[in-house]
Length: 306
Ligand code: RIB
Ligand code: CA
Figure 1: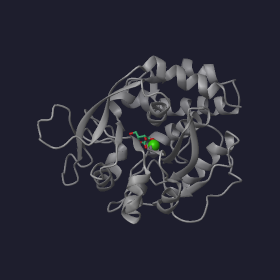
Figure 2: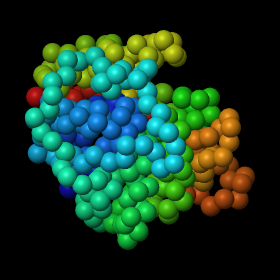
Figure 3: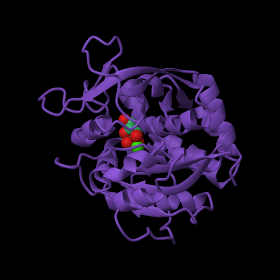
Figure 4: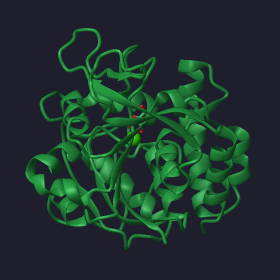
């Protein structure tokens, strides 16, 4: 019995790999994709989602475009990480498929039904708008598994992880919603680095494998330059892997609050692991990961795609 999932994303190298991992895994059934501005502008993230589905031969999966900008802030993109296209590295063709009409927030409301897990791998603007416009949807979301946030150091600032930083108000609203949420943050994604060896194992396995290898070739440049890493954290794929196999990531039940009024720490996910704030726990936060098993799952599943 597979779990129905919907991915809300901003492809983005790791978003694209997350989509492919979902398509390659019988434990989950991807029923829809929604896009949001984040790593790149909405037009680019939407095109990239369509291209990724097409490469896997799954243009049957509907894509709906969402918010062009955060709820209240100027959009911050990440061209220095993902390039001007948002998927720099591989040669990209124009997708032949088009997004469905209507905004992502309404499309998400249509897709949410009991048992569905929503996997946002981007700023939470679309999810906040979904909750705002369709308050009844709470009962229809089994769980949110979000790639975002950090217990410790951020990435876009020392205090904040990118998906939280771009739209702190949206993240605050989602964590305050009462919907069961798992936070897959940098503390665990940085523990599992996809290396050139992993890329070489995929390069000749098929169209999807070559695409992932070429995405990795580009993605690796930022992580070498900025962190001195010998590989890249495929952040968003770990959120999908957590739905596929919940034994990979160890989580702790804790309160997560999001800073929205700070000069230095806007977008910080304040994770109260020891319960010192008195705030009620409202999330399950990733604190450790079996990196080896996660990476093997990722490589073996991508290799199985045409
Ligand atoms: O901080 C990493 C996250 O920000 C990932 O989801 C990446 O795709 C970007 O959206
Ligand atoms: Ca992302």
